Length: 399
Image 1 (cartoon, rainbow, N blue to C red):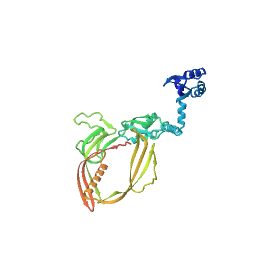
Image 2 (image 1 turned 180 degrees about the horizontal axis):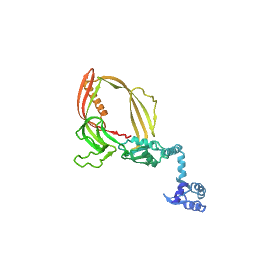
Image 3 (image 1 turned 90 degrees about the vertical axis):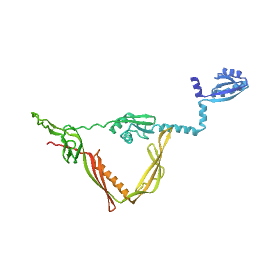
Image 4 (image 1 turned 90 degrees about the horizontal axis):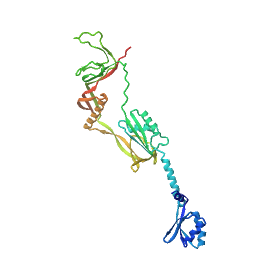
C-alpha cells in the first residue's frame, strides 16, 4: 500500500514494447533499471517504470532493435503539469478555497428558540453585546460567556444557552417567573377608597376589613385597616389585654361605580392620500446594508414599506439579501364625515377615554349612550356603571 502511494506521488509511466520483449527486459534488469507490473496485453509486453528511468531505456531499445510506446502517464507530477496549463482554473480554485476559509470564520445565521412573552429582538440585542450577531467573527465568540451575558441583560430569562453548528448559531432560552418584590414588613398602611361605589368583592390578605359586601362606600373611606385594636365581645368577659395589630394592609376591594364620559367629534376629518411613490434597492451582506444607487432623505409625510428577498441554499438562509424599499408620499386632505361616520368616530373616542380612566382590570358593566348633533359636531355622552378596583394603599407615618 505504501509503495503504491509512493509511486502515485512520484509518478510513473506505463509503456508497451514492440519487438523482442523478453530480451529487452533481461538487459534492462541487468543494467539495474527498476521495472514492475510485467504483463502481456493484446500479445505485446507491457511494464511500468519511473519517468526518468524511461528516458534511459531508449539506449536499451536501440540495442535490442525494438521500439517502446507510452500508454499511460500517472501520478501527481503529470496531474500538476496538466493543471498548470490551465492557470486560471488553478488560481480560481485557490482563490475559492481561500474565500471559503475566510467566510467560514464568520457567523452566517442566528436563530432564537424558546421565547414566549419576551420578543426575539430583545434576545438578539442582548446577544449582540457578546458577539452573537450576523457577520460576527467565530474566533471572538465564546458560547459559554455569551449565555451568561444574555442572562444578565435579560432578567426575564431563567436559562440561556448558545450552541454553534458550523457558521450558524442557535440561542436557546427559557423564561422564568419574575422575582417577587421584597416587602417591607415594618411598613404601616391602610387601604382606603379612591372612589365611591358599592362593594361587590372583598379580599383582605393582611389587616382587618372595615366594610362588608354590598355596603356603599365613599371616597376616602377606610376599607382594610392595617393598624387596629381588637373589638371585645360584648357578651363575653373582658380580656386583660386587647390584641393590637400594626403592619401593612394587603387586599383587594372591587366595587360597582358610576362614571360619566363626554366626547365630541367634528364634521371633518383630515386624511392622508397617496400622492406618489419612489423606490430604492439595498443589498444586505452580513447585516451591513449597501445602497444600490443614489439615496436621498425623504421629507414631508411618507409611508415606507420593504420587500426582502432572502438568499437560500438547501433550505438554509444565507446572510445575503436584496431589499426593495418603497416610499409612498402622502398629502393631507380634509373630508366631510357622514353622520354614521361621526357616530363611529365618537364611539371609538369614548372607548379610548374609558380605557384611560378605568384602572387595570376595570370593565364597563352597563352604559347608556346619547348622541347630540349641533353646529356640525357630534357630542356623545355616556352614563356608565363599572366594576373596578377602588382600594388604594395609604401609608401611615409614625413620628
